[in-house]
Amino acid sequence: MIKGTLIPIGGNEDKGFHKANRFRMDYISQGILARVVFESGGNKANILVITTASGIPEEIGKNYIDAFARLGCENVQHLYICSKIDADSEVNIQKLRAADCVMFSGGNQSKITTHIKKTNFHKILKQRYTNEEFVVAGTSAGAMCMSMEMITGGSSKESFIKAATKMREGISLIPEIIIDTHFIQRGRFGRLSEAVARYYDRIGIGLAEDTGLVIKNGNDCEIIGSGMVIIFDPGKLTHNNYDILKDGTPLTMTHLITHVLSAGDSFDIEERTVKVMTVAEHML
Image 1 (cartoon, rainbow, N blue to C red):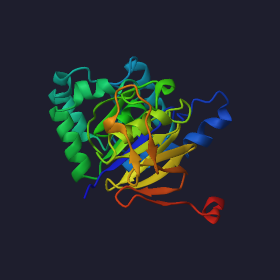
Image 2: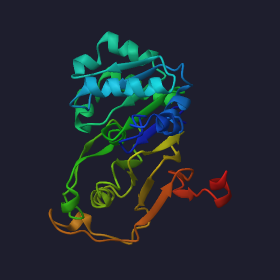
Image 3: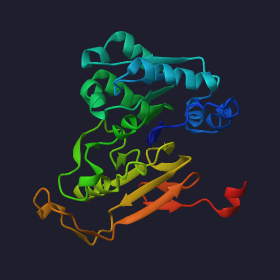
Image 4: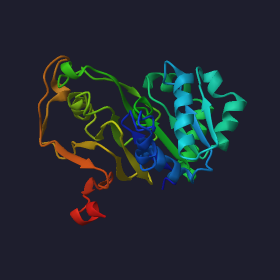
């Protein structure tokens, strides 16, 4: 059984940078980053922010250091890995071993796999996630890279046709699912549905912005944040013509099970079952 906790986030999570001072702590103190801190052991936790995916790593790193500082965290470091050699440097390996939580920023998920996948850094990350009470969080690209089958691109306008969605191997922390982010805001229903048509033994997870999952034991998912999580379960498809179509041809799928979930709801990956928060629970 996996001992670690995985927290994929749909991007644009609240970092407390509201213009009006009265709003700054109202939301961030109850938001996704606060949950990351809680799962990591509290505000004394060692949090390592990795900005490999970003085109502006220093700026993004500072944003997260400032955001975690608003939550009382003092032990936050920024790490930018730009090559496999860099990933496996002794200094960076020691930073990983000392961390209670690793948080991958957004940007381009392919940079994460190019520079980190199949390195000693990657091996140790997976070992710690599997064997320790260790947290791996990631937003946007940092969430999408967590799966084995990773979406790397695909226009929303050109979706629902074979080969419109580009895929490659991710860092395989949770191979049972395929993650897409900014899901509601960017209309990415088509590309995730094509992904599960192609890999119909996986479950598609579409995360809205400022929305995420807390995944325990590699299986038990709790929805957190202000938006929705869309789940595509192809386990009971009665028709799927993906394998016989030519590239560029529209897809047909029937009986694709779809769930729309929000904060407090939960999903069991192995059993493919949903538990929805009751009205009474919402009122607490």
